[in-house]
Length: 520
Image 1 (cartoon, rainbow, N blue to C red):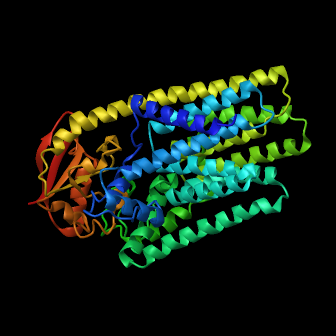
Image 2 (image 1 turned 90 degrees about the vertical axis):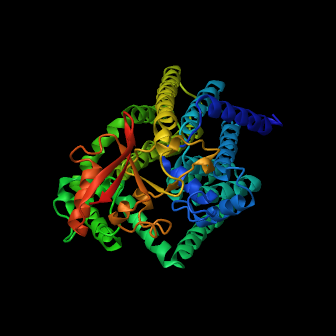
Image 3 (image 1 turned 30 degrees about the horizontal axis):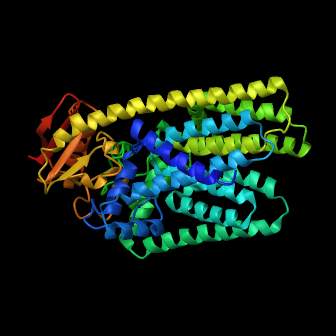
């Protein structure tokens, strides 16, 4: 159909608008809210391009757009545009793939839109990068110059947003790209250029941070901290009982809870801890594989589909490829799980490329029984993620209710010129309207991945900063219970700085509290 791509573009705009309104759309976690606040100037007072996880090139474009007008939330708008464009590319590719039966197109397209709804209800920069990179890889497969160069642009943009997510998707799509293009060497030229551009953008990002010692220190600190917080080996008894000399166990526990003391867990300490966690034996790392049981249904369905395709295909080359690809996927899942938590957003970035690859490699002829089995597998996967999406919607409704009716009323007690600290993830900032993040009315000082960030160091470079008169702490109402964060923070303030403290309650409700820690 001549105008199919434009029809799909219109359908995808309508679908996104409907899902964003009905579900509705919001950010999955606080990370995107904080990066939006940095980009639009809410955090520091001026639009800034240091978005931490996002390349400075992309950050500079956003900061420039915000300098033109803050009436548009450019961070969110850019993600929405990339989602719609990427889904148009993917849906067009699925519908125009030759030798595919109507039932195959309907099933794969239906599951793809179900997964898209799951992503919309919890928008995140990782899944946005993954979806954009996948669309770019699919265009690289089409072989025409226009498609390939458009694909190059999408992959580079994806790498700017989240290099790790784009890299994971690219890794999963590389085998099918090589399988499809074969020895048509000219069609690899755009891919080589693409890889050079990605490497160049990474070099620009590193050089930009290196030009400012404070930002360079923060960049290293945050990278190492993330490796600890996202590593199940860091939480083991083996590591906690063999901490480097001079590092207190309680300080380490507070680091793992995303609330480190920047002075006690400084850049030198974080380097030592990273080396300690990195030396955990492979035998101990293998125990982390039990965490994959949370994806047992999805993995079971994927492997069932791959086995059915292997048994069905009569093409020896495709047969060998499918076996090797299955083993490659299994090895990648295991590798990611050995020293990291396989988060749902990362698994989604792996799932969709697998489904696209399966679709491209479907046998041209399929026996009735195996056709029914493939249908059943896709229906099960679509049903499973429909249920997951509904469950996520319910959770997000609860989070939004908490933010609107329980948390914001407490924050109204904070003076306009004061700072708010959130310990852990108690404050549901992700429920902020993604189209109006600039409405967030409070100065915010955050620990977690904002520890050591130059925006915060003038305010508080250690736990002593928590004793400021203009520092308010947002926490759970059970903040005085033994082994919670507040008692441990007070204990460490007295231990390291010789200051005894007391709690000044400001206000509370049934779940949350606003307090201050004051020196006695």
